[in-house]
Amino acid sequence: MLREKLKNLELRITELADYLQVSRPTMYKYIDCYDNAQFDQIDKRILKLFNYICENELVGKKNIVNYILTHLVDVKDMGDNDELSLIKKIKNYVISNPDSKKSRLIVAAVTTNNLDDIICYLSDILPLLKKKKLTEEEQKQLQPYYELKNKIDKGVK
Image (cartoon, rainbow, N blue to C red; front, side):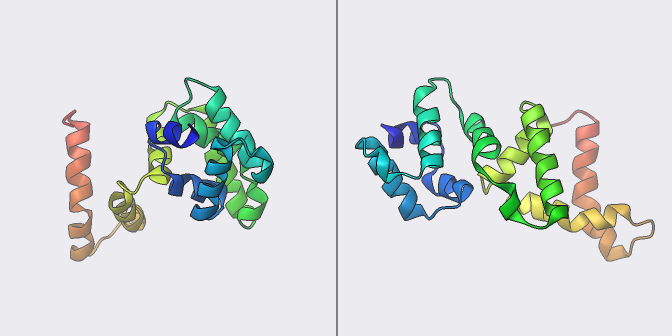
């Protein structure tokens, strides 16, 4: 029931456990309890999420991530004031612009591992993009970025 719905939504239980800051075995236990109508065995906030998932026929992975960010994640426990401010800014942006390319990238970045290498590369070169004078090695490091940017600017995808 719930496990099937999560599978159909391509939402891995490991991902869900990470989002909700519980262990994977605990998440499996909660899902089994939900499927067996043992609702009193489930953390109340997670039970609300499960109900949201099961009661909304048109729910998608993005809706679930937004629901978690909006209703379940307590950003106070996530870091200092600068980090909290950044997390709130990201959250507000994704909620306000759920269909923008940037929001889709943010959601994809936190829900899959497919972009990890690219994100690491972009993080590494970001300081170089701000520099006025680059070494030869730094120029080589930026070459793939400029080639891709060139293709995108020309409309080649």
